[in-house]
Length: 343
Image (cartoon, rainbow, N blue to C red):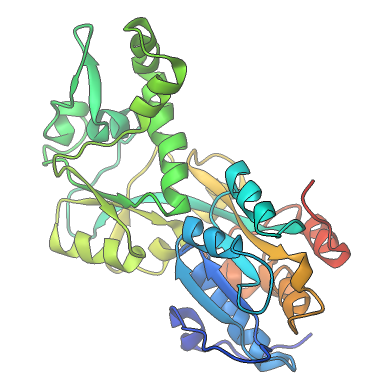
């Protein structure tokens, strides 16, 4: 299949408000800001190459998109939710309670969580998950007691890091990136430092200790960013010594403004994520309401086009934008074609 050249507008598409229509003929998608640029590229190419209107693609975060997805079935609800994490059991339950019982899970590929700073700022090249935990955790175990985090500079955490004030801009709680950041960075760092076991010894339950490991400080050293990555980038622009948490694709398209930190000595690249060498990577998904296939025109066609070799393969435009192609893409293509639902 031959596709017209993708324009810059495909990459720049942002939230588009869907207008009410008596008979909707346009696929509606919402969710993850990480998946947004990929879905926007696909939507634009889909509209240019198929006899369907260009799908409406909105952002808002994984949790917000899945909440809308689970509101029910019908043309006044979205067809597809983008997510930078797997759908949670409680969301599947909420979907079922609203009549959304047949859900197709589609893994589109992989992305990495990048720690990046202003290109002319300090070089953060010695990060370990333990450093991020010790720098950003709300509380640490010090001399056998759980106390508010006393670390003010990155050099307080690790002498190999710059003697700069700790200032981090991390995804807000509605973003799927936040969950991966908490589990693969904060919790991992908490466990490797021995803080998790120390909390248990202090009398915390395992659940409470895990929650304490993933709680971030609220004294201004860690700032939640509820908007998309452009808001994080603006915060980095205004804070030359700050560290921001981004998806790999966003970073790769802003290398004129940002430089990446290493994690455990590994730089986040397509190759290091594909090989599993980079420690902070995650799969990306979208979820389809099977009940909308054959009812809302183009839903299945869009999904099949999204995961086609032409789009999501290693030589496709999504890979050029930063998506790490899924080695099991053929299985995903078959699952979408067969309309296989989650068990």
